[in-house]
Image 1 (cartoon, rainbow, N blue to C red):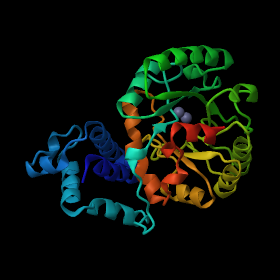
Image 2 (spheres, rainbow, N blue to C red):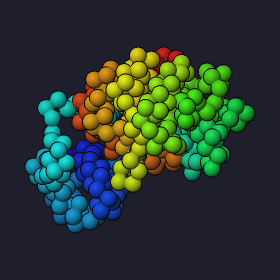
Image 3 (cartoon, rainbow, N blue to C red):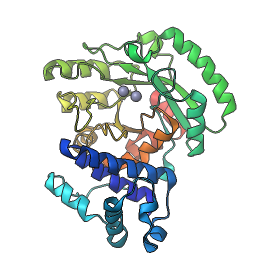
Image 4 (cartoon, rainbow, N blue to C red):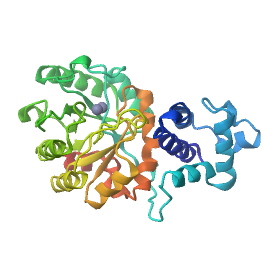
Length: 335
Ligand SMILES: [Zn+2]
Ligand SMILES: [Zn+2]
């Protein structure tokens, strides 16, 4: 078993543990180990044979034991137990996704808003892991604490993007925005601005506890905006600490499918939003998906391989995930 496959198992364990507030620290430890394995790609078989699994960053004796079981039997009895405890047994229709064909991430942040790296550092990070494109989607103005971008700063950002693009070959930079979905479902930037961008991710960030009928109206309005391409982290939840919005998911997902608006599986381990069950519902409603890291620094781009298990568990095939499209196909899909 390779490091990426093992990291997905650790990541799913972390996700299940995180649902239980008392297991938060253990959940974080599993996610951290998964992250370090995606980044360093250790040779697990050799480390196992030499009893050296604990030399991997973030892997202590407990996680090493889980890895040992995984390497010896091809599955994790610990994960199986957690799944059955939580009423989420394995299903026969899980899909295989070939991550070597993953072309690029469409949701990332830079220091233009709350990212901690420059656009050049993000572009180089994407290049280093073989991506063919990267969506740069900083926040919109309403998120004042992070200095969100209005029309004027977006224009300035596009000039920097042209400069960065000339320095990084092989990765196409897509200029986008993560635009806030306001309380009434309007968006935090005018259509005339959204229209100019390559990728528009509309996300709920505040007032997530709106009562479900109002929240449903809000999300229905957002997905019907003609310039929205993706709904980012569709509930805004943070498992174990913040429940996230509740609305008529089926109605919103069907409307998203009708408007060809994709739903994001946000692979940040603190979010993992959707959930396997909701992603399955969205798939059955006809939605497409993006699998994004929502990275705030280049090292966080590695969240995608950690989060891909959710799409597999939801039975989503590769042709429903936009990130497997090449850049021309993606640009056409985002028009
Ligand atoms: Zn967001
Ligand atoms: Zn984001």
